Structures are given as structure tokens and as C-alpha cells.
Image 1 (cartoon, helix red, strand yellow):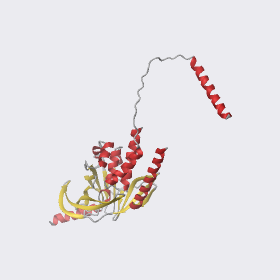
Image 2: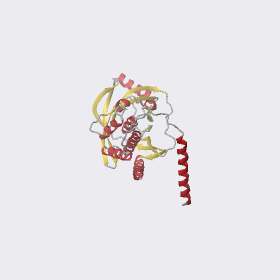
Image 3: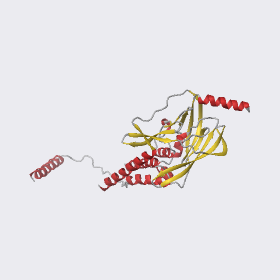
Image 4: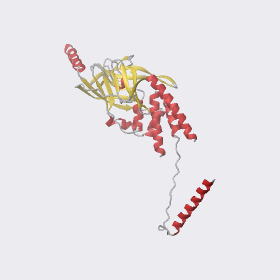
Length: 82
Length: 241
């Protein structure tokens, strides 16, 4: 409990110092910057990995190739999610 | 007639005492109904054109052969690598009289595998013939069985071989025909000959990746399935968190 109190006090004190430091600084840049927010849906790469693996079986591919193909599909998905 | 016979004999003798390098390229077979092909096209729209520049070399002596793609000619492209796997190529393939040793590209935390298999020999020789690069070639077909968790499936593989070149080898471990395979058609790709360099000095064979362990195709398939399931379970667990 004591520890928690100390942390809370320290946090308040620190924010106080920070606020005090900011008081003397005048904003130098008054231009408004428009921010663009792009929302991109992340693909479930795990699902892609498993789907690619199963898809190959439906077209009579062997296990080794199906796994390799699934790995490439997964890596490609991870890359496009970044 | 005698002259032809003697020239064939001389050519055959000359060929079996040297190394011959045969170059191939692959052409992906178009199949608009294939969902796998659609997936590859989605990932790499230009994969068919990119495949054209890959140079495969089959180096043969009378006893053995190796088959490898020139790494410098393989583009860094997921679609191309997918189609390479579909073509039956996963790395260096060394073919002896009755067995094949193939570098698998399956990697288990850095541990690699060499898949050992026997060469299929139950070819059906057909009466069809055609000229490839000025040589008369004959058609043959073989049934290839692929097993996966959905069942066992039979595919027909077609080969065009040239009896003038008395080597029983060909691309991706196929052989045991009365002549060198000039063209090989699998379900996904066609291997076509581009160049033959005869009377080359016998060179040392390339070697498999270090830390590779020999494994049968059946055992490797079991291992892949087990690890695949483990990976899927692990990913699902991570997604829950």
C-alpha cells in the first residue's frame, strides 16, 4: 500500500515538473497539420496458412509441396499486413 | 544402313565415356479451373513470365546424374517458388541407377532433409514420335500416385525421349527410358530441353546442404503433417490471447 502511494505521489510530482517546464515554452509552430488516418483490415495469416495447405490437397498435390505453398502464402500475408 | 548403325554406335560409345550437360526450362501449364493456380496468380501475377528464365541443368554420365537449377536464374518471387515446388523441384536431385536422392526444402528449425526414393520404371512406351531440336523423340507415359490426407490420386506424366542419347535419366528424378528425356510434362509444368552440351569433362557433383539427414518420403510426409498441426494449434492459441 505504501509502495503504491509512493508511486502515485512520484507520478504526480513528475507530471507537475513536466507541466512546470512547459509553462515557459511558447508554441513555435502555429500551422495546423492535417493527419490522415488509414484503417486497414489485417488478414488472419494463420487462416491463410491452413487454407493454402488444405487447398493443395483438394488438387491432388503432395504433402511436402502443400506445406511449402502454405508457408509462402503465410509469408506473403505477413508482408502485406505490415 | 550399316553406316547409320556404326555412327550411332560410335556416338553412343563417345557419349557414355564423357559427361553431358542438358539444359531445360519450365513452362507452367495453364489451368483456369485450378484454385491453386489462381492463388499463385494472386500472389505473383507475372509468375509465368518469370519462370521462363530459370535454367535447369541435368548433368549425366553413364552411371549417375544430377539435376539442379542455376540459383542465379531463380527470381526472388513467392509465386515462382510455389510453381517450382509444384514442378517437383525442391533442390538438388542426384539420380543413381535405381534410386533418387532429393534435397527437400522443408526445414525443421535449421535441420534439413534428403528424401530417398526409388526410380519409377513402369513406363508405357507409345507409338507417337516428334522432332525436338532436330532429334527424333518418342512418347512414353507413366502413372504417378500422389497420397495426401484427402486420399491417393493418380496423375499421368508424359515424357519424350531420344534413343540417340543412351542415358536413362531425365528431369526431377524421372528416367529408366531407352534414351534421354527431352521433354517431361507433369500436371503443373512442362520441362523442355533448351541445349545439350556433349563431351564435357567429368566434373565433381554438387553436394547436398550440410546438416541434412536422409529420410524416406513416407516418413517426411508424416513429420510435415505432425509439425503442421502443431503450428496451426500454436497460432490459434496465440490468436486467442
